[in-house]
Length: 59
Image (tube, rainbow, N blue to C red):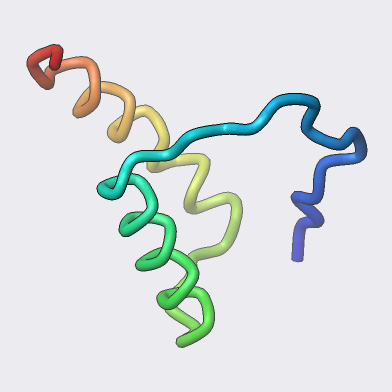
């Protein structure tokens, strides 16, 4: 397992919209249920995620 904790405390509060909070909650739930992928597989998925994000219309 990879330790993703930040070693430096956040200096400013971060505001997150409801959609992002819901996505984070879904991700945490999936991890708790064991629905994860190995880090090497996730790295292979990143280019697909980036291209999908870049092709979305701007808000």
